[in-house]
Length: 244
Ligand code: NAD
Image (cartoon, protein in one colour):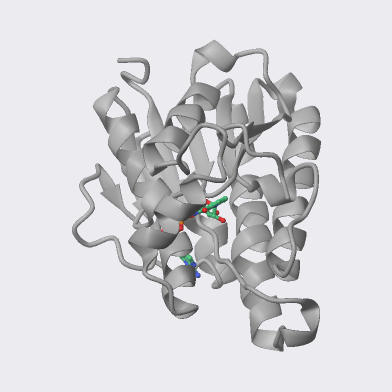
């Protein structure tokens, strides 16, 4: 029970990785506030539905979580959207949605969470970035890679700037994970998601792509006291598969 007595806010809680993070945090004793557009059916101590593209909602989330839980020790910025294709195929709406959910919302939530955490002696922030936002981008996902690189850079900057307040900011950078985000991409391209996931697994040295729990375990490690000396790091979780 590493998180007994701790309070946490998780965005994108309705998604594949988010659901695993919430389940594991609660299993280890944390009281969790869940944020997503639709949070009905998610077991948690507080439900904060809304659209992260709404600046007022993103600005108010950290305070709302603290009010609902009586504290805010852990923030996981997990929500994300993927836009596929090169820039020449990206619409204005793709740009706004990608920047809004993947960069602006974490910026707004961190900006308001950090002073709240500082008031109570510190906390841990874990951002869910991507291997394509770490060392190198991948092909044909220009907006996704650019926004994840921005989130990774923001993580490194905040990790440096707020360590002195006892606030540790780190990111996980997964490669492919078996979630609706990945599976919907296969379905859109006309592939059977189960077959595609299994074929993709053969390209990974570990023999399979990640399950959401593989990523949640590393998120919990970064949120825990075991990572007490880690600030501003980008942790690749890739089963040995290098970035393409
Ligand atoms: P998912 O699509 O299953 O979940 C995404 C979550 O984000 C959902 O809960 C969704 O409601 C939420 N969200 C999206 N737009 C929102 C908005 N406007 N307002 C509020 N909530 C919104 O995806 P996932 O695979 O679980 O992804 C979780 C994180 O992991 C994302 O940041 C993603 O970029 C990252 N990631 C995923 C993979 C992968 O292969 N699945 C790889 C690397 C990184």
